[in-house]
Length: 328
Ligand code: ATP
Ligand code: MG
Image (cartoon, rainbow, N blue to C red; front, side, top):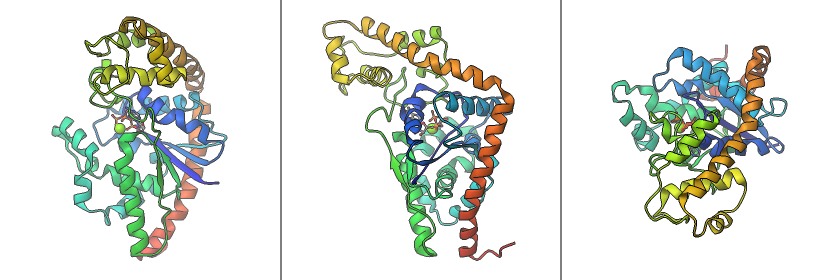
């Protein structure tokens, strides 16, 4: 069986962007691959986090992943900081990463603009830790949204560089990015991606938003003055809503566009509200049950950590040996 790895940061509550671009696509992979799904708390602290919120978000996301269909019997579900190999390998990979490569990372450029008063070194080396996450498990495929493509390329590059410098050690992973829904945009500014850490909460819909919030945010979503539901780059707001509509309803874009021909944005948005509310409600129900069972949650993430750490240790041992560290 081939191996899949992917992660999500507990830097806030999950958005429908995370759901459509990543998690929804993780679920079917469980049947054919050996999957590792990780709540990457070490990545989340590259921007300031209130400890209380970080704890809550981490457990919320674990429960939410299960509510979305991640089955801990099939997949290894764990918390990044519980497998210390991630930070250990990241240190080694830092030594073969060029500053120039990290300087070109667009996520660093975007996020450093937002947190000028806390421009820490970890935000800069974030992609190196991400490479470690992936390479530790000899990963074949990494299902992510479009925004992570550049980081994936770095992970591939580091794997190849290490393999060339020492000898074959890491599998070179391939990204798995959907051609559709891989980049859901902010509802308030369709030129930037939807992000859970956006300070404007009207920009995103959370998987756990209540009905009223979902409806309000869709009503307020930015559109245009053209007034025709159509899928093109001149209407980025409508295009984004069409992507969301299609992802939740399963209907093709053409079918949806046809359905609203000659009708206004009001009708379209009203139906979209309905579809999103209905799509999220079963997930929200399951979430409540799982989240309330603290012992069960703890059992899952402890088992996950043990399994992940065991696997990761194998790769790390090889790495340490090749670079000349004395085994203990
Ligand atoms: P943050 O703003 O803190 O970085 P985020 O919303 O970008 O949060 P991440 O935890 O960084 O979420 O990413 C988790 C997964 O969701 C990744 O695979 C990422 O590519 C995907 N993803 C994030 N935002 C979107 C989006 N707007 N559309 C599609 N996929 C997305
Ligand atoms: Mg992100």
